[in-house]
Image (cartoon, rainbow, N blue to C red; front, side, top):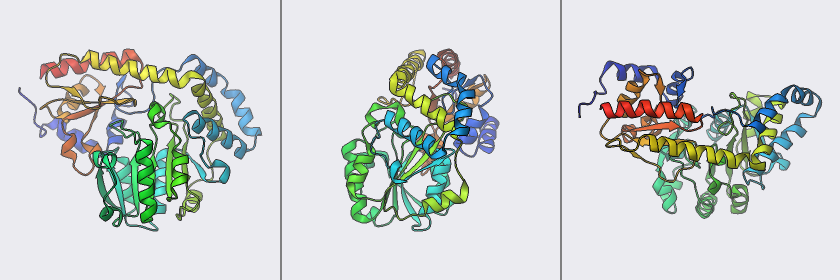
Length: 386
């Protein structure tokens, strides 16, 4: 086939414009065919619409009720809906943030006071390595297969102050099973290493709904968990990130949290509580069906296109990865962009070896079916054109 070179002006311009995945996503925000970012952009369900209709009343409630009471109810509703019943909010070990990225920044700054190296899952979304590098941490890649297959090497654990795992991982969708989390936590306890989890995509996969906090608390390890409400519901970027930690974590998380913010909006907390209550009452199952239907729609729309494959066969998260054969993913990105379709090229997920993602694109599934179908047809036409 005749392929464009990565040296083409379009590809060069894309690389010059977008130095990280979020910048690629920003390019897509105004497009009607934005299949790039993993945020929820589908229509509200009828019960979710009723929450939005109630915002004036929630505003009044937020102004009148004690903030700590509101935050407690929101945290219990959200984490309870996802099976995390042993979370330590009542022990004062849950810190609310505007977003999971801010929680990540606070964690990174705190870790840097104790350690200069961190073992990080590979691949994963590139803002994680960027934030960690930004505070001066040296990153040691841990391949996802190695992380899942058995104990980590002792030599690795002696070189780092923390092991960082995204579960379910973005972009692969892979979930760290309960027994593997238990073994990893026990290893970290043995070596005095902090175990940190980013669970931002947990809501999409019931395999990730076992009680992580029960496992972590029983292990005796020092641990941090970053929670996120922002991927599940189309709330126009109104979201909460929670930074959760063990009793003896030994990091100045509370101090750095207080350096950066006083608190989060009680109105957003009330909205999160209501959305979480709807999720527990059947809304989460509806979301799972929506994502599964959209995944099938995408894969059926591209059926029969030569030299492509879907990488993550068992993923349930709100993204899907497409291997485009011997085409360069950035070339395909440039070609579909001419039709106002935006996807996400995957080189930068592979933060330690970008070439591993050169032939892969990530497609967001938290969209209205019509937008996804239209985008899939554009992608199909471009791929068939070679």
